[in-house]
Image (cartoon, rainbow, N blue to C red; front, side, top):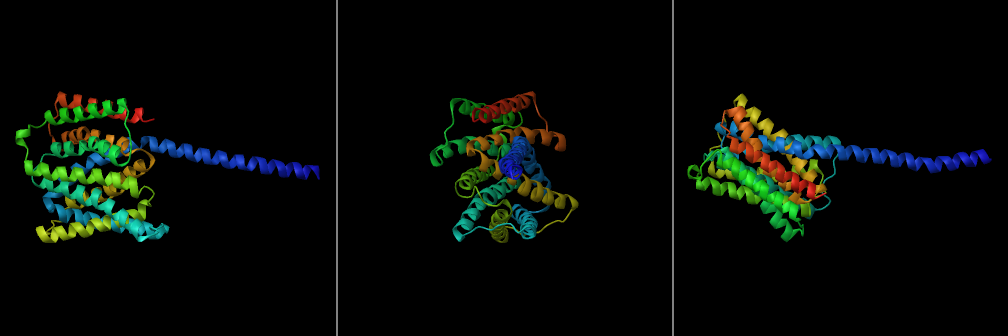
Length: 317
């Protein structure tokens, strides 16, 4: 009898410990994975400008975005149904998800593509996107009560200075299309407000079903814009189809998924600081793929932005 009681006591005492060990290991693996998420996100996000440049010659911007949305929704809807992913519990919750999607996707993606169509150089497009961290930090302080310390603001300043160096090393402001810059500014406002809205109202949405809602809403809007302002003619070349698949799978599913996971786990302004790196990484990719020149001043800007982002990320820990 004593042996039975001792065995029962041992089982009851040690079983929870085994569960704790398993949960700790699972948490540790999750933490290890998320450690690399910022670097992966920057690399994937930076290819968006390159992918857009590959696709723009074969379709107008709203038409291209609509085709991209069709591909993304088809993939995510199939995955959601196959995995029986949970849908929003209420209509207001679904509406919040749709609004965040319209800001992040419809406004930002269409704005960037339209700016490129208006011959805005990739460097300027990336510069506008690179300004997002500062705008996000200011608005997050006002709307989400997120506070940055002195080191983080120093990092923001260094990141912004690095972005300016990268752009100055490649282009003069006199060469800019100011109308196209205004469109890019609208894109910047959209993704900034969308990031904050996602953090405030949609942080816990399921990425699969939430993605279906967001990209469906975006698809409806860009289809309407395409019908009103474009011919919707598409030249179905292998280059265009590769561009669509890359933008849909790598950017809309991969990069945006990582962005939402990081927003869920950290402060919006901290996550937004990663956008400082996109102009430099985009400039490097443009140099490799399109032969666009990159000066030592641009390399210095890359190093400065890296230091700035490191300060923001480390000071937040």
